[in-house]
Amino acid sequence: MTTPGANKEIPLEIKVISRHLELSSDLKAYAIKKAEKLKRFLTRIKSIEVVLSNHREQQTAEIIVTPQRGEKLVGSFSDRDLRVSIDRVVAQMERRLAKLKDKVKEHRKGLETGSAERLENIDADESAKNG
Image (tube, rainbow, N blue to C red; front, top):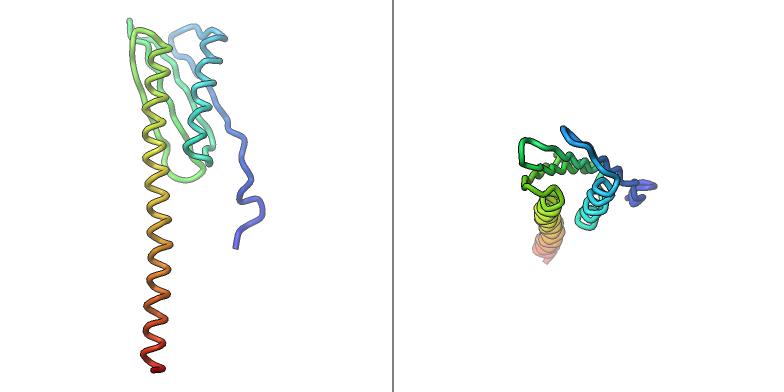
């Protein structure tokens, strides 16, 4: 039994936060465009935060993915070029989300297989009692 609105897609909130640097509108748009790619891997994402910071000569991009259920996923990458940091951390999060998605699929597949096996065992027990 499903609840009404269970499959309703919640709008994805993407925040771009800058620390110790001036954020241009181009760079903010670039970060949002890249972060939007992550929703392909996990449909039930509540929000994504992209934190861009500068520490000495290292430009760091950090992404925090908050799913509707479960724990937050955090990835970080530093480079001299902030666009490279964004690209790398998005690629890192894509791999992690794909792995999580596969893990969830395998878990569901195991539950379905387990249910079928239990039903077969129940049928076998019933026929042994009746036969």
